[in-house]
Image 1 (cartoon, one colour):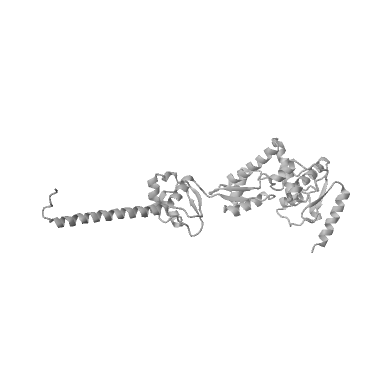
Image 2 (cartoon, helix red, strand yellow):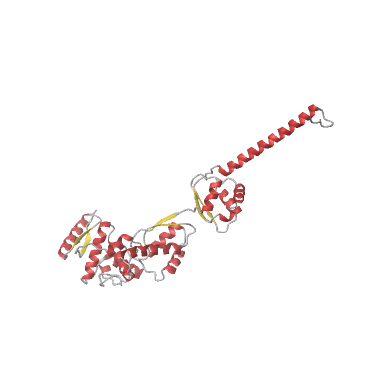
Length: 340
């Protein structure tokens, strides 16, 4: 049997033991409660007040990242974020970039996303038929990068500044975005289309020019190959193309502006691109054509059409002879006169 503690009665000793047990039990409860609270901090999903984009700069410290995430409402505790990152030993693995937080995420899920470099994907769509300057303006508006930066980037990747080398398409990108990278991606995308059409690079400039005219002449998919046939047939016969969009581009290119309404005097306004005053193809494309127009330029329809004119319904009426074309023109003029 154990000996009683000297100076304490058996009852006093029992009281001390109970107090020690109570203290230990309290400490255990505190530890359990603390562990549970810590687990909640790590696993409880947090939802920002609204979807947010967080840009993590290259080389940012864990403390800076934690503070930024807390300030933008992605996490509740910057301190717990720092502790979790150090406990996992992943401080050097947190990737820079722009992250989108649109759904609830726990602190550990946020850390995992930063480790994986799960940065936000952005999209920009370039419509067919735009000039270079119009594309650069659109990119500046959609990306928030100054127009001057896009202009300088185009000068670097396409020194001649010639139209027709950028493929209209929807492009995905991440931030921060380098204009040079996206413009080269657009050029490479067009090269892939041209390579599928012909491996003879010497043919590419011709296809670009023809496709740019097709792009401007019709918005209807079923008409692209027909317009292409008219261009091919007229070139083979030595006939001037007489395509209005080339006149418009030539005036814009030489004067920097165009009213929007083509007049008879405009048709006589001679520029290198005016296919009424000059035979053959223009010296450069007049816009940036899409893949469908490039394919139509390479594969015209097997028809002998030489003429076409608007039919009043958004499409065109095609003809082989001048007589038939004249009738189509008269029909279109009647439709125009009847418009309110």
